[in-house]
Amino acid sequence: MIKSLLLNFTTHQKVFAIALPMMISNISVPLLGLVDTAVIGHMPESYYLAGVAVGSMVVTLIFWMLGFLRMSTTGLVAQAYGAGDHEQIIRLLLQAIFVALLLAAGILILQTPLLMLALKFVDGSGQVLLYADLYFNIRIWSAPAALMNMALFGWLLGVQNAKVPMFLLIIANAINIGLDLLFVVYFDWGVAGVAWASLLADYIALLCGLLLVKRILNPFYKQGDFLKLSKQLTDFKSLKQFILLNRDIFIRTLCIQATFAFMTIQGVKLGDDIVSANSVLMHFLLLISFSMDGLAYAAEALVGKNIGSRCLTKFKESVYVTLFWALIFSSAQLFLFYLYGQWIIVQITSITSVQMQAFNYLPWLVIIPITSVLGFIFDGAFIGMTRAKEMRNSLIFSLLVVYFPVWLIFSEQGNHALWIAMNAFMLARGVSLAWIYARLNKRGQLIAI
Image (cartoon, rainbow, N blue to C red; front, side, top):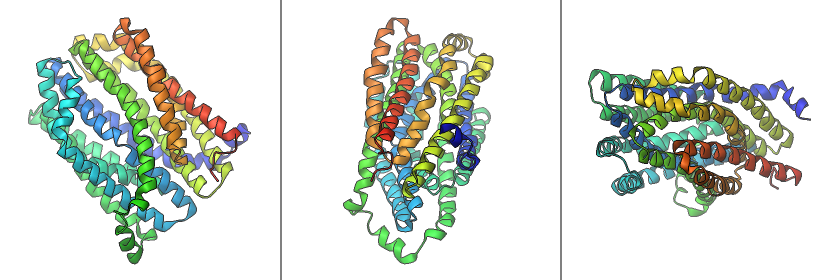
């Protein structure tokens, strides 16, 4: 059966119509991170790089914990799109933007206690904390743009449009890279320059996104319906499904972010060179995740659409085809990191002590493409199914039963223990979701009645 599905070239075309634009654009995100790290990594002291790593970790943790905005919007909009429910498509866009603005307002109001809470867990040097504070206090003001961009991104994927998100991501990251070079290299603003570059790029991307979404709305747009739906934004009943779905995806995302935050916090305790080396190596993990997420996004959009149209055969085709290509790409990444990993590290930072530490832990990054592949694709499938409860339970299990116990078992190995635990977490996440998927398939519950 699987063989016949893989020979269905129409499904392959549909997958790559979404996956390829997203893979191209997503790769620009870790490339941006590489530029951020490179411009700071060539400064004379490692605490500049460590400060950016910690400050960026706090901002990223806050924004990514709210990534449910993108994911829940994609799944719900894709199902409405498959069902041909234009009114629901518009309602979901308005709800996502409304919730994004509310969350952004909360972040800005609570920014000082959020930073103080985060830094309580970071036992870094005074210089590291100083530059982390500087970075955070600038970058956090991009919250309204960053969260609204998530909402727009999720809506666009839900209506099966991957080209506009690709355009927006590439433009935003190209602007960010250009501003990095201008502010840090030319104006010599240092850590502040990196933060300002990211903030301005987020707002420019938002402006472009709003203009493009307005054009895309035309086929779904009716003046009366739009005004009527706008009045429903504060109606709890119309928001209930959106809020409940977001709650479970938030917990799922919190579990993932806990692993990255824990790695940074423990790395700081091991010294500036270790946390800087982990920051360099984390860009390898981002390269894996952002490229593989292109296929996961395809799974989200296609699975959601096929659930909306009640087509189980095409549902399964989209899952198996994206998994097939994910295995191919993850194998390619493994060989890329094995052959050129040290060369990439040298290009990121010229600090010899950081390079040596990164070389030491590189082997753990080489195998992560394989240990994480199932997690990316089945995560996408469950988002498309809007089965957030199962995703939540899988991630809680992977964090509490696998990640922390594995770290404790190997904790005497220092930084090696952190990377062993990360690989174990990625593997547990994928295997547990695959097991839940197989159980739902056996029971005939992939598409809920």
